[in-house]
Image (cartoon, rainbow, N blue to C red; front, side, top):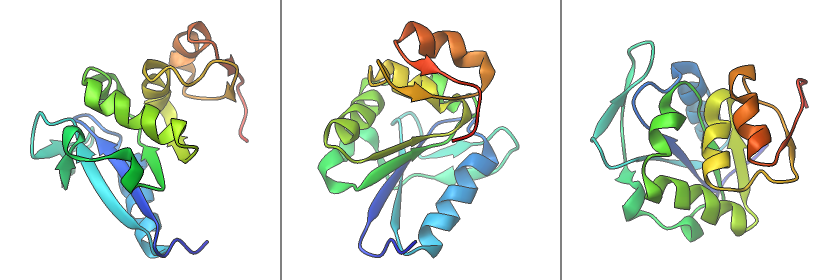
Length: 145
């Protein structure tokens, strides 16, 4: 898929799943997208569960959802930390409300629940957050798309 002239945000916080961050980061770039790494604002760089580090391009309060074509949220424990920052949650909600692509990997469904955008939607996640998503109104299934 060609993503030239597309701009995608990847939000990050400490304890992100390294592969769920780096794989989309590089694959999106290979496809021609401009990738913007956005942190919660708590630091200038964040450390993944396996120890890799990433610097951020901006804090969530410094970007506008209208500047992006989509968002890819990596899992790990980072989404539980991300959702503690209203600007991070607002970014996800605003991108969704603009009808743009919102992708959530593994535990990233926590961000979708906090953004209140799962009600009536069918989705999957890591099984441990199933109850959170169901309580937020999602139709949770245990299957690949």
